[in-house]
Image 1 (cartoon, one colour):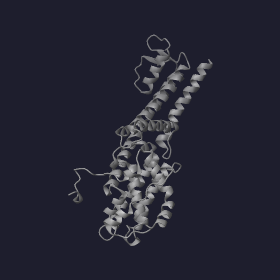
Image 2 (tube, one colour):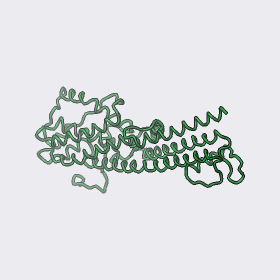
Image 3 (cartoon, one colour):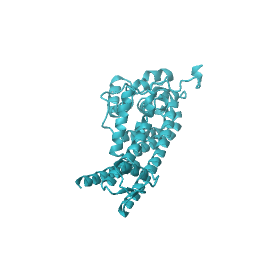
Length: 350
């Protein structure tokens, strides 16, 4: 009798855990369930161990898929195990529809499985009205979990596509922070890039909110440098630092556009948290390269001014650096060969 009660209580706990974790992950826009978070971190560490923490390893492209599928399977398995324990709490809860013989353990597990999957084969049935009601509730739980899991996946996949589009947009501006700045120079100033910042800020703000609503997006890695959002946002933010603090005021892009795009990245950084920062500052930008290619005299380039400036920016840049390191990249990979293919011939290639 005590064992039966323990099975009932444990079953209810497992069912409640599955439903709660699912609801928090799918419907609370600023959180994820503890089970989902644990599964995500375990898969993340396992894949990065296999990839030897190398961001270009193609195996990491499957990390997001594995996490999504694993979480959905665990939700269903928890509900299945919990409901099976509920039926097991009464030896006579389920009977063979033909012989009326009580079902054994494996038959009850089988019965629970086809009930939550709504297959309803009918070879086993509930023995009383009370267990028929439990069976109906089990079918509802299974239907909700399975259908809503699929519904949850649709926006996650859609947002992953938007994330890739944002990465490519930033990568197209230049293959490094310095090159983004150089490419925006029109011979007299750097204002031409202002028109791009409006669209970019909107995309980054949207990505930040999607990242908050679907934390699983953080684990969806892309081994292609052009398409990796973490590399591209770090590259864009470094370019913004150059625009804001090193380009003379009369030659900078629109101040309101600079503020807009900078704060969109701040909104993104706030979603990943600031409790984990790199232990050291990343290298400072190569300002001499910008001066040589544009001929513009840059501000705050003497050693004392540089030290004060980058000390004040330390928290932000170390957070970007840690985010980049945790995704298997190094800071020098901001200087990547983005869009360097024989399909993308530009005048400087000729």
